[in-house]
Each structure stands twice: as structure tokens, then as C-alpha cells.
Length: 294
Image (tube, rainbow, N blue to C red):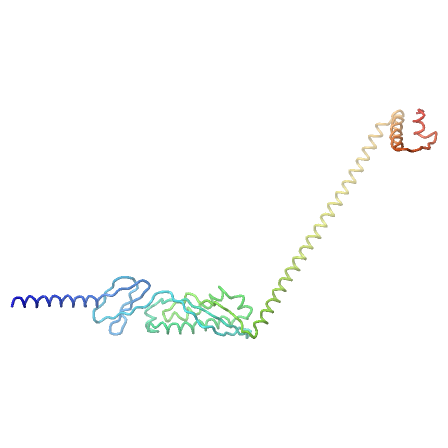
């Protein structure tokens, strides 16, 4: 009898342990990294856990739902949009988004990711259409990249805020033209770029000619000034030479000696090579040859 009683007690203890484990498991939940967990009580959200770790809830009454807190990439299908000048363009866009407010996300979209992406696709398309329809085709092509991305992201983000979603970036990865007018647009763009290049070349040539003309002018001024200074120096040199010569031969003896030296120089130059000289007997050279200096 005591043996049966002891076995019954053991069963009770085991049963209590199992019940305790069930109660403990029902009253705790774990929040992982990059995750939100909502706690519902009778269908109503009573708590949202955002910090990773072990959390507690009311057992058997509260239920939990996990919601991702990761950044999500969504590739939107390509679509046609019309520019301000009524030109068709094809945009291929991707969106980076995340859940910013899990309560709004659950209340508006019931935490269904497919619904969220439907809303995001519509919002980004409308933002893209509004941005591109406010520009001409040429302006769209010039604005593609950071400027267009900011316009679309800002508008889409303001629209998705009511769903607890943050659009981190809405980026047009491809901006193309329909095949029927693609070639014409490319040719027009090439022509415009050629015109711009020709304009820059003409401006450069004009500037170069201006610099060349100014340089020639400066060279002419410097050359004329140099020639003027040279003429003045030459005249001053001639004047100084004549003055020095006049002082050096200011007597009759000096003048005769100077005439004699000049005559010798002239005779020396004349006798280079085999030559025959015909001289007047009264010439200075004849006087030198005859030794007559009077």
C-alpha cells in the first residue's frame, strides 16, 4: 500500500513539473535580432517588444506575432510614364524599405508583406509619375540619378508613413525610351552636344586670337621702343665718337698722322691678292708709296 502511495506521489510531482513547464513556456517569449514581436490579448495588441532577449506575457491568454525589422529590397516591375512634353519613358525601379512603426503596420496591413509591397509599388509609381510629368524629357535625363531618386523617395515616404513603413530609397535602376523614338532622341542629344562642343571651340579660338593679337601688339611696342632706344644710343655714340675724334686730331700734325694711318689701311686692303693699282700722283696712297707726306 505504501509502495502504491509513493508511486502516486511521484506521478503528481512529475505532473506538476510538466504543468509548470507548460505555464512557464506559455508565459515567456524570445525576441530575436532584427525582429519585432507583438503581444495580443483577446485579439487586441497590448505590447510590442523591440529589444532582443527573453520577455514575459500572460500565459494562455496572450499570443505573439513576429514581424521582421530587417531592411527589405523590393524590385518593382518596369512601367511607362509620360513627361511634361508628352514623351513616353520606361522606368525600372527598385525600393529599399523597412517597418518603422509595427503597430501601424499591423493595424493597416495586418502585417502581411505582400500587401505592404502592393502599397509601396503603387506609391512609388505615383511618385515617379508625378516627378517625371513635371519635367521635359531632356530635364528627366539630366536629373536621373541622385536628384530624381530624392524626389521619388521623399514623396513615396510621406505616403507610406501612414502604414508604419519607411521608404529608405526608391532608385530608378534603368531609365529607357520606347524603341520607336529612341534613335531620334539619341540623334538630337548628339546634335546638341556637338553644338555645345562647337560653341566651346569657337569661344576658345576667339580667346586664343585675342591673346595672340595682344601679344603681337606688345611685341610691336617693345620692338619699336627698343629700336627707338637703339637709335638714340647710336646717335649718342656717333656724337661721342666724333667729339673724341675731334679732340684727338685737333692739331695739323695729328690730322696728317690720322690721314697717314687711314691711307695705310686703305693701301693694305687694296693690295690683297694680285692687283694693279693706278694712282694719281697727288693721291694720299701715292704720297705714301713715294714717301712724300708733305
